[in-house]
Amino acid sequence: MITRKMKTSIDKSSLDTNAFSLCLVGLFFATIYFNVEHLDPFNTSKSVIVFVTSGWLFGYLVDSYRKEKILLKSYESIVVLIVVFLIFGLTISFVYSDVRIVSLIGETQRRNGLLSYLALVIIFLFTTRYINYLQAHKILKCLITLGALLTIYGVAQINGRDFVSWNNPYNSMIATLGNPNFASSFLALTFLVSTFSLFVKGLPKIFKVCSAASLPFALYAIIQSQSRQGLVVIGVGLLIYLNTLALSLKSRYRLYLLFVSLTVFGISLLGMLQKGPLSPILYKDSVSVRGFYWRAGINMFQEFPLTGVGLDRYGSYFKQVRDVEYPLRYGFDLTSSNAHNTFIQHFATGGMFVGLSYLTLIIMVLVLGIKLIRLSSKDENRVNLALISTWVAFQAQSLISIDNIGIAIWGWLLSGSIVGLYLYKIKITAIPVQANLLRKSSQKVTINLFQPALSIILTIPIIINSLSLIRMESAGFQVRQILNSELTEGNKQILTETANAILSNPLADPFYKYEAATALVNAGQLGRAFEEIEKLHKADPSNLWFLDWLAKYYFETKQYQQAINIRSQIGLYDPWNAKNYLQLGILYKQIGNDTDSKNMLNKILSFAPNTNEAKQALLELI
Image (cartoon, rainbow, N blue to C red; front, side, top):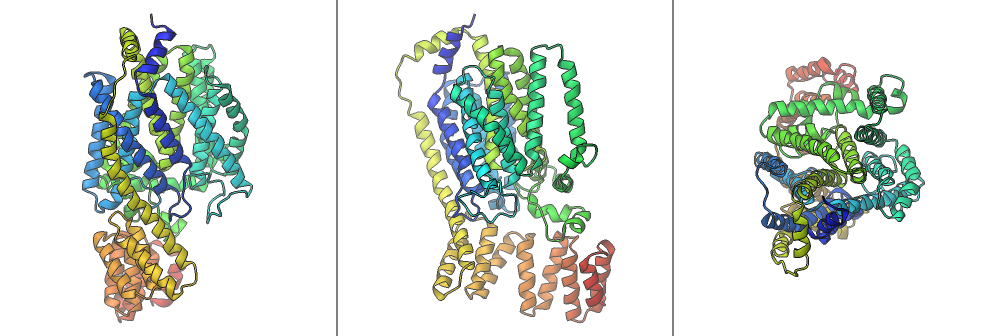
């Protein structure tokens, strides 16, 4: 018989509670932190905090494996094996990526590269080892606090009280995540946690009062964000919670509730697809556009099934594989750097090993979550249901959204919590004698140097390299500031020095280097700018930013044949771009090649006859 006292003893002695608190502190600040003096105020700053946090936690993780081996033929061994395959797939995709620096640090304003996913994996594994119900309560408290803070900030933004003057093309409610969709989704997740926590025994009243008080304001902020994702997340989370609770309590109404839930889910899904009575409320054009992103991602996976196109390299291949209808509907310049579906994104950019490993891991978390509910007491299940329902809601939003680092850290933490709580329950149920052993061992004072030594060894290089990313962001911001001001001779000198700092930074994002190189034109260094963009083009021949700049450069310098060569390359990587074919036709006409000029006209008319480009081509290419 395992008593509550015995369980509490295990809770307090089987792990370092400070380690888990440190993890939550790191994730807390990663969520709320942003830097307005960075070119990207959100993603890189958050990533750096996550890198450093995971680097330090890695010491605890290895130390836990050193002290307590993984049992063969256990669920933990299966989970770890899946994670090993995932890391293997990520590494293979990184090695075979055409631009490794992007696959390492991630795409501009995304940062979903190898480093980010290794950090998320460490957080996941650490949580599986260090979670228990005392720590689970800390997760609830942390998310309730975050939800309250971001709700206050979101409401302030909605009412024009933001302390930052954002240059924001979106809805004003972006919280600390940079986008109304991300802000809406995260507030919805904390809304669910706050709601479910009201029924959790042992949670301090102050947190329950905070939860109850913040709920209406959070809902207001979500609605005012005009992002449907938040409402979808809340709906999915509530339905999962109510149905799972009814099934676990064997309520007589469970089948009716399940039927009603499935009906509501079906009508809501139809509404998002612009069908049924809820379509005026739930449908947005951004939902339809995701179909183009998903199909493009599937096409990438079919073309590169083993390695994918490279971690976070979706944007470089999107225009090659997108449907012709996409540019005709949304314009020839609009693109996407993500599939807006985490599962498709993993298959498209990481290939079979990454996609299948990630999908298998999600299924394993779900299976162990169901087992955990069956194994736990009524009071424990209030905590379990809060975590599992929120986790399912997170997975639901990941079907239509990007793996934003500020939200993804909590999805991986919840995954690790579900797996870890199941392993914890198995441990205390199967080996009750361990409680006495742990109680005795907790009385001994020992000094463990292994963990801090390993954490320091890993964290120091992480901090050093993270400083390069921070310098890149600061310099990129400074370049933008100078370009937006009056360019005096003194400013030109500062602009040159700042641009050089980016161009010489080995960890700098290629797009940041591109902006630094183009800034040199304003400093009167056109030749130097050309040389730098030529280097970038050689390193990434399919990059349309580099190609377009070079095409314009050759045209302005009257090197028409070189311009034709570049625009022909653009045609390979962006086959449905009537703007490019129009410029190519003009170039052919410039050198007296009327045959190819008319071929460009016919090409434009073949797929874009009703566009402004077609009308202009009819005037200029005949």
